Length: 408
Image (spheres, rainbow, N blue to C red):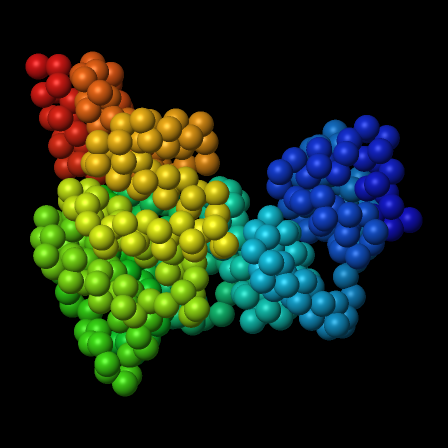
């Protein structure tokens, strides 16, 4: 009897639905494919199902049909399914299908396919905020015997690991991994996409930790000139975006505005809708943090709303909610600000470490504007604690001083 039939019998005997068996990790669609024999499970899938069914892992392993190492159409079909799920923007299905395809590629020792599908799996897990799983996939990629000895690929994996560490509040580790990514990419041509991406990851990690001088040095060293035939406009836009972010953090508002205006001209929704929306969210956020409320901010908020309505994840929409709340507070619309903050707070578990700290800061600002200094101080102190735990000591001191001024 095939694995799928045994899985279905075990699930029904246990009284579980496909939703309960998947437990938010595997979609009902993918479990249906497994039960119909259209997919075979990976080792991680077997462990998950064994845990949910209360069964021994080895028992489920006996049900698994060994892959045909010469079945190349199976790999092609699995990769097509993963890419199709990506086109549908269904990250949960992407993660499952890419894991399945990566497993076939690994069994067939097909390094390029294994790399592509493993990276697709990791990226979809990051989008789902399943950071521990994404980190596990990336670490397996880094240490696997199938890892191609390529400076570019090493740099990409280390960069993704840095992003995971940053999103989970491990800023010192994020900076270290970003430096390793830059070092791995150092042998690539100066304007190679992987080398530029490594620099962008390092700039972001340094800036969030508060190492603004070093972040500025890395950012301004990028030799990206608008109109240069050797540099794609998207890379120029990303460079301007990175420089602008650091400039705003350093208080050099005019430079920040100039660089973000350049990025806004070069980033087009028809080229990459998600990147376009993400930029406008970030641009509005940095301008609002600098106290700027003008037409460019309103336009960016609207652009981000439009983009994320089509391609955005729950986290991206919640982050945009924080931007909208900050806008409402700066325009004295306290009622709207509180509605937005309550909505984001109700989904706190979805937020990454930086967004939780920003939520606490915004709550502090709301209560300060509402003449509730003790509540404001409590939220600002909590934001300071979160920044301190992550390693952003300068930001933590700034917030602690604000909290002290409210109760002193």
